[in-house]
Image (cartoon, rainbow, N blue to C red; front, side, top):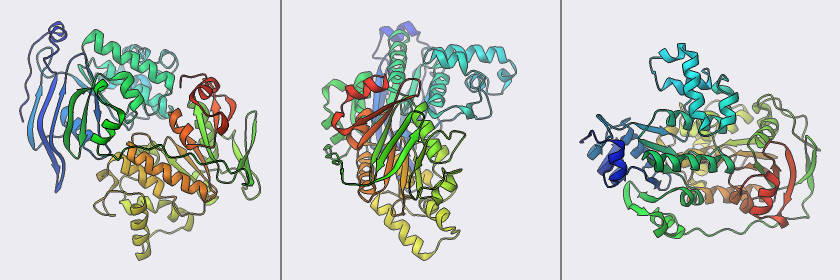
Length: 499
C-alpha cells in the first residue's frame, strides 16, 4: 500500500478541487477466510460532501477503518494528500459512542489534543477548547454541560459531544458514520449548516454515511455505493440518481411502502398510559409512537422498563402490577426492551451470538446453560430474522451493525409479552433490514403485544404506528396524534420541530 503527502496550502486545495485528499484504488481486506473488501475505489475531494452508501455488511465501516489507519488493507493503494507536510488530519465519528463516562465533557473533547492526559490537568484550557467546539453545534450544551460527566449525558447529547470533538481537531477529512442517528430534526438541520460551512469555507472533505435518503439529498454533493465489498457507483452526483436507483445499486429489492395496519377499534383496552398531564387508554396490539425532543421519550422509556431515576410514566390496568423497579423486574412482568444503542445497552460483546439471542429467555426462566433445544431455538430465530452469521458461536462483533440489531429483536420473539419498548431500533440499519424489522413489529402487534416505538424519523413513525404521543422542544407531552390525522405537518406542529 502506498501513502503519499504534499505541502500544498489550503488556498491551493480550494482553488484546485481536482486534487484529492484521499484516494483508494482496488482496496482489498480479509479477516481470515472472510473477504470484506474485494476491490474498492473511493475519492475524497476538498470542499465536497461525499455520501458513502451500502447495505449492512457491504464493507463501509471496514473501508473507514482503512482510511483512518486503524487496519491495513491486504491489497490496493491508499494515497493521502495533505494541505501541508505530512498526512491530512482525519477525524471520524462512529455509530457507537466512544466517550469516557467518568471524564467530563470538556475532558473528553480536550483529550484528543493531548493523548497523554496532560491537558486534563489544565481545566481552563480544556474548557475553552470544548466550549468553542460545542458552540458550533449546540450553544446551550456548551454553556451547561462542560463539567458534566459524559456518563450522565443522554444518547443524543453524547452524539453531539462526539461530533464536536471531531470538529475540534481541525481535521481536513471528516468521516461521519450515522452522525444524526440520535439527533432531532432541528439538531440535524443545525449540524448540516455547520458541515456545509466547513466544506465551503475551509475546504474540508466530508464523508457522510447514512441510510436516510432525505438527509443524503439535503446534505451531499456526490455519492459512492459499496455493494458486497466492491464499488458499484463511484463519486456520482447525487442529483443524477433516483432513490430507487440507489436502492437497486445497494443490492436491496425495490422498496414498496407496506400498507399501514388498520386500527382495530374492536380490540379491548388493556392498559392506561399515565404520565404528567396524560391518562390515555391503550388497546391490545397498539403500536404507539413517541416523537419530539428526545428528553420526553427518554423519560417514558426509562419509566416503563424500570431503568434510571425517572418514574413519572407507567402502564396500569388488570394484570399489570406495580411499575417495574428494574429492567430485570420489567422482563419478569413481560416487558421487553430493544435499544438502538447496541454497544452500551444491548449487545453482549464478549458472549457468543447464541447467548445474545437467548438472553431474555434465560432471565425469564432462570436458565444458565445451553441445551440442545436452545441450539435449534437460536437457529430458528436467526433464520426468521435473516441474521447472516458464520456460526451461532461467533461473537456479535463479527456481524454488521444491522445484524447485531436483529439479535436484540430476536431476544423477544415468541415470548409471552405484554409490551415491548423500542428505543431508536433502526438506528444505523439499511432499508432492507428496516423492512424486515417493521414486519416483525407488525407481527408482534397482531399477536396482541403493545409496542412502544421511539424514533427521530417522523416518516418511520407515520408509516408504522397506530397513534403517536408527541413531545415539545422542552420534552413536555403535547398530546396524541391519531391515525386519521397522520401527516408530517400535523406532527411538526405538535412537536414544534421541522418534519
